[in-house]
Image 1 (tube, rainbow, N blue to C red):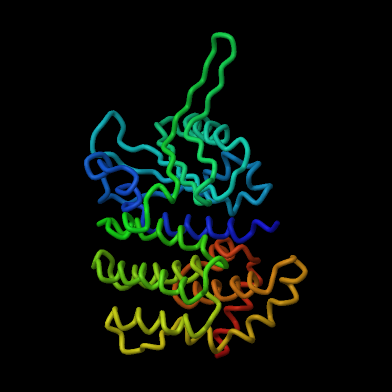
Image 2 (cartoon, helix red, strand yellow):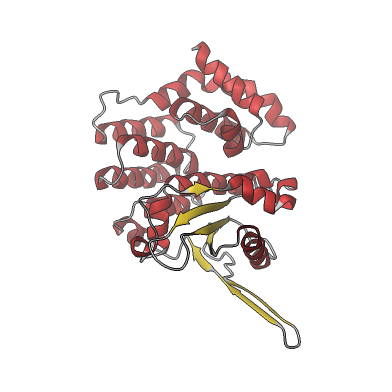
Length: 318
């Protein structure tokens, strides 16, 4: 069984978590505004995280779905702490031990407290350990961390929350429906999420646009008609006159060319046609709608930098 789609979903979620980090803290920690200084800039420590856990990089850890962020405090004995977020879509054995290893390595490296959070993004029956326990004769270790599974809240509960981060969690739920329900139905679910975010007034147009890109790639729909309806509705809600939507326009113009460009490489890697097309569209979306570097896009999509450059060149030629 190919686990690539699930892993890529977790990488997408990592990007969204980083983008909406203040709302993430408010979602998982109700007292966040009284504990964290959310007005100060957060520092993401991806490089340091890979250095501390080099064995994960050898196994694809450069794309591992974990996040380490330096967060300032409003009160307490420390000026700032580290928040470690691990996104887990599967049921890998030894997960809780890995969380413990992260904890003591990070504490040893930085010498400050580390708040650990595990977000489980699999199906409802996913294993979701919240502690690591080891007992010998007298010596005993008990390490607890905050654990959350995306189905801990219902569809209705997430839609009703005042925090827009709940819509990222809801999108993760809906992504698991891909291939299980008709695309028309999945399209309605995706549109409901987008509509709720836009009508909430919580994000400006730029952040909404970035969220829409995330949403379209996480809750993936192949049918261009459904995607066009989605873009028209989003543009209408945002008051834009270009109801076609620039992202879908570029996709329509370059879909065939981009697919053929990556087909041979994709087949060599054992990717299905659907997975390959998804890689191409995701790359185009990021290139046309963000200012991320080639290396960052390659890491998010899970392709080579040469692949990203080829897609970039095809867009420029248009």
